[in-house]
Length: 187
View 1 (cartoon, rainbow, N blue to C red):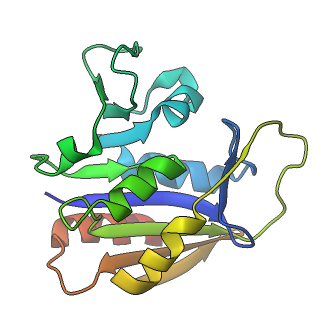
View 2 (cartoon, rainbow, N blue to C red; view 1 turned 120 degrees about the horizontal axis):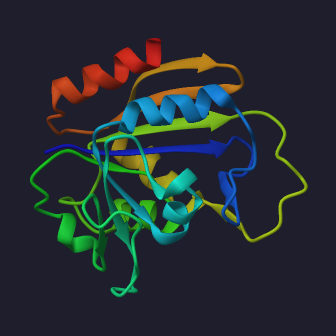
């Protein structure tokens, strides 16, 4: 089982959202995200789930990490509520971590069994939309962990987004998952 965290953050301030909105519109970025997680098991927080178009992702099982165990999902067959990040310690399949900030932080700070094996760190180096309302959400607390526990395998740039693949230091990483992401980064 491989855990993969994937995010896009703003280069200047590690911003990932304003309220429920991504504060930039880069078609290649959202298409890349969909291609990486398509057909996979994806975990995300309630706000990220609610921000998805039609509250779904193509052919994905979605696990909504929320303290509200009575939360109602839009697809009872493929979407599930989980109220404790520790439930993913022994997850039997590959798992893609898709946000928000509290979910990323929970996986990165809750011990070795939850630490992602791969991080796809997409860094947007453009202007942030200024007309969005809501709290600014950033992943700054995750950056020291990234610097300390991961090494960069590859990097490329598409539009104004630099995509980096990082792997956990000193650990085996499933080659098929890594190859899939590398291939998607090159296309």
